[in-house]
Image (cartoon, rainbow, N blue to C red; front, side, top):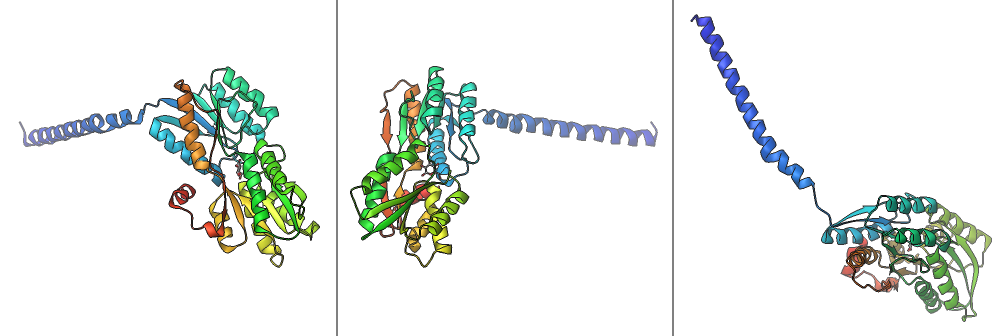
Length: 333
Ligand code: BGC
């Protein structure tokens, strides 16, 4: 064998050995690393639920989602959070229809109004998919349970708070999330009933924000311009009070305006701390989400559940701050 052939065979042999080692090394990696990873990705869920909020990115609904997610993780549920990016009834309804068509194991949604939601919920339940309403009930539908605020009572509490916190003549304007949503109507009605016996309190205007920050601000400004006699505001959904406060602070600072809002979003709490918002109605969105998932599982397993579970509602003022740990945890989540 020539010297050249020996060198060629040696290099060839070495090359062969190196290729073999690479094959063995990567082959082993695929077996020992990649395969178990794929196996890990196949998580077995017990149920598949959908939570449909009024507005996906709304901070209030993020708290409902957080509660639902925590419960879903605990009980092995695949949870989807789907719905309109900005409040929109048609999209909301469509999301319920699509979820039902994809045969999920349970749907959690608001019962926003009787005309559109009651027949739809009834159809979904008749098709064998349980529906639990959260935050807003469609009480006349066949939904299996409602978990959320007693909205009439919450509005009533707001009215009582206004009475307790003010004296003399009060002209109050209401900005409500929607004229057509069940819970918003109930909040307004509760408020009206609470202040009705108090002759010194007059409701002079009720406007709608359509769950939009911009509209809430526009309406607040319009009311303040058209009604120089206004001395108080009641904002019935999470963003209304915040926007009323922005407008009062920025453009009508010289006026003494009492503001009562809804919910405990960080902005609301900041306005309460600095004194622009006087009081707010506390809801428990985290508990609603958590409770809805738990209730759904109980229902599917054939256990008896109460058809209505009212989550806690109360008034919060500056003197109640800082929040208790439990509350702060829910607000931070
Ligand atoms: C209501 C929700 C609503 C949210 C809007 C809350 O007070 O309970 O139904 O979607 O406000 O910001």
